Image (cartoon, rainbow, N blue to C red; front, side, top):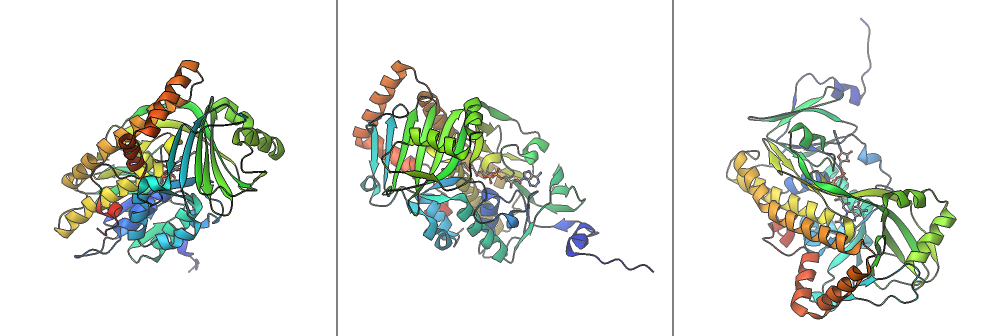
Amino acid sequence: MQHVSLTIADKLAFRPSMDKADILIAGAALNGLAAAVALAGPRALRPLDILILDQADPTKFARDSFDGRASAITASSRRMLEALGIWDEIAPHAEPMRDIIVTDSKPGAAARPALLHFGEGDHDGEASAYMVENRHLYAALLDAAIASPTIRLKTQARIASYDFGPGLARIATDAQDDAKGSLLIAADGRGSPARKAAGIETYGWSYDQSGIVTTVAHERPHGGRAEEHFLPSGPFAILPLTHDRSSLVWTERSEEALRIMALDDENFLAELSHRFGGHLGELSLAGPRHVYPLSMQIAKSFVGERLALIGDAAHVIHPIAGLGFNLGLRDVAALAESVSEAVKLGLDPGSGAVLETYARWRRFDTVMTAVATDGLTRLFSNDNSALRVVRGMGLRAAGSLGALKGFFMREAAGETGRLPKLLQGEAV
Ligand SMILES: Cc1cc2nc3c(=O)[nH]c(=O)nc-3n(C[C@H](O)[C@H](O)[C@H](O)COP(=O)(O)OP(=O)(O)OC[C@H]3O[C@@H](n4cnc5c(N)ncnc54)[C@H](O)[C@@H]3O)c2cc1C
């Protein structure tokens, strides 16, 4: 008889029976991993068995690559990461935003007067947000998922087919590996194949803008100040990172963004410096460049039979206010609490009642945030001089009216609406 030596991967691929878990998660990027870690938390009756799959191999992402982005982590998102036990790993890489200024100016302007100014004292002495490079968020979430005895991570496993309900969700990968669970959580990004397979449509539009993302080092310290300069082509955000570095989100018309991306480092840096200004001294590139097309997209429903959408699979918003991943964490917190309550009562975590609770909880907050973000984007991505005057008046008013400013600060800190327990720093 011929002997065939099987690797572990072969054994997995040839597993004869269907894999089974309580919860299946499609996509192991930031939101999928956060959902896995939140759902695997301590539970009175029984722990949930979670299987998370990704077509890529996230375990191979070098800690200094991932997607090149950095995220503004709001105060409530930080409390959630603390409750999940991963903030300690992230904290050394988190730069508190002590100050946020907003200007409406032209590139290369000698002076950029601040139209709106939020100091640290505006939020009870607590930094309203922390800037963290996504690679550090990713590494901490991945470490927590790998350490959990109830999370299984399958990489290089592209889910190719989906079957929803009535009692179970079933999936199969390209390699004919199949699995079933009470609930499939789609954390598979803006093009979500799971959402499409369930026939859930989206509302939305493209902004014909792209966000160029990179990191720069500068001669002088930023002092924790975030700057949002509304330039004629779109917002140019300078976001403070650790060690005298800043993350840039530089918005341009998509065609112009491609031209800029094609420049060599020297010319790229020259264009960047012209927009950045000279207030932090000499600049140097301190990371790769990435470009992201910018759009607004909201799924018509956040749930289907045995299916919950989270993160970019459910909603994509313009990064103008840096809220996208924070919205994803709010989804994760609401879903984990809805599922957890059901499991504690011995109920099915993928039942229609659980999914309805989740969808109702998240719909209003998401739509309000998306509408506000879209309005800001349209108001500020236009060089019309009348609009420029209106912008100035609007921002000066917001800067001087305490109550309105308080509202903006709470929204930026993710503290409006009914907060799920995780966002208040409590376990579910
Ligand atoms: C320029 C820019 C700046 C931003 N800045 C901020 C900020 O400051 N603050 C903030 O909160 N947010 C910010 N965001 C938003 C934030 O980055 C995203 O909302 C977040 O990264 C989305 O994560 P996700 O896990 O939902 O999706 P994704 O990162 O898109 O991950 C989807 C995963 O699903 C996997 N997948 C897809 N299809 C399959 C399949 N068939 N089978 C298996 N796996 C599959 C993919 O491989 C991928 O790993 C910004 C966005 C942009 C574009």
